[in-house]
Length: 324
Length: 303
Image 1 (cartoon, rainbow over the protein chains, first blue to last red):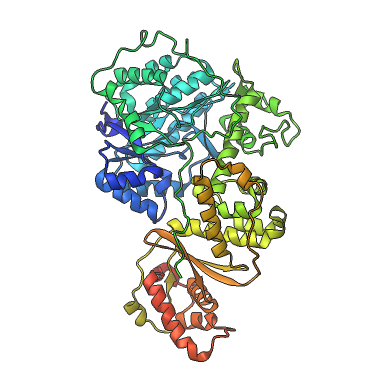
Image 2 (cartoon, each protein chain N blue to C red):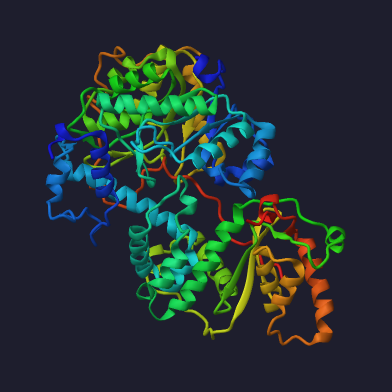
């Protein structure tokens, strides 16, 4: 719902702004509630990225989503990163900004991945400190997103949803609740995803992400290259039931279909947002969602499939022609 | 070190080292750590297994994800270099380069920022086409820079006409000057077109096409001067005369206009009678392309 973590705005249903759709967006000017941009794609000095952004800003509402702030990294963020991010915030007038509850850099060396944190009190303290500092610097509400993870730590002292709650309560920030990531992590760590959704402090949820993923024989990879599956819609339905209508964004980052196909998939969220929540099979919070979920055997996961979200999508710098 | 004794920092350092370590030829995590420990023990020291995956296998997912991501990003920025050295050798080159120069930027855009210097110093990764490969890498990196570096208010021809020999100018940040050993600019453009055509053709197996080096026309070494630049938000390259290159280079270094022109025509074989009109043409072209601008105030302050 509209709350102070999304600047009291309910944007509706948006999609991620992606390069393969530019031609369609600029020529057809489709009606879209809002676009989410990857901040890092537009933190440059000039050129086509900024031209595209300005054209989008003329017609659409834009919310920024980052992939490299690494709130949980022990080493401090690059001041240049923060400076450019604030510059972009001023340009887009984004009502809130999100990035991930994870780490990914050490001593200024970047993995460009969203690495999971050990759920320890030390990590809570470190992450809270960083979120607060970034929020103060940017002067807009910040929401932290739960990530998909494939590894858990022996050092963890609490569940992921307990960790998330501790961080957002202490940092006094919002949550970007990614229900696909909850599902992926639940499958990979063998917990009930509905228990997670039911435990999240609903009044802090600024935005929700939905997406597709890829199932392998022994784990699930967060690839953003498929439609949203029914069990994830069930989690979404429950989240809306708890949080009220909340700005929702479909992520589709690889093997991207046509704009119309992506937008139609996103708009399925309106079934839950506009007409009340359809009945969720079973009693929310009581039925382990993994029970009966079939995991097809798609091989051992050794193919070169990448988890997609952390990649900032670059524009092609290929010369169109030669100017003699 | 036991997990209970590991601080957040220790976990992150251990995990980052494991994740960024090159994969085996079979794209698996290496069995042994550099210090001789078994990686299964390293992983088990901080990663918990589940009922389907060991600690090693869970850490390996991140190790693989890291390499697939950075190798993919580098290949996207250097498609012509990949064609010149071949897909197999490009991957070996990329792994060696990224091991020496892992990303130091929040953006993947800067991943290849040290590649030219690194490749120039490591000829064994490009074989007999090494010098050509360095030129190709320089051109492709120049395209990345020209694509999104700043553009300042350009000087008009009328403004340029008011300058004198003591005036200092500046070049647009997006203009990239390249002194090449080969006329590799046209080759890069051809290879980019070939890449685009092949990736858009149905049924072409990318690995088969790109594993071996591309067949190239015979190129002789010939000093070639090129500028990569941006016009109307598209990246182009423009062949430069030697005199124009060295004049622009001197302007970029902050020399007064008279000194820049003197340097530009040093050792020039251009007839004296042609030089005045050549300079007028240069300035007209620069004004049309918006290449020159006023220097920033700080650059004029000499210590």
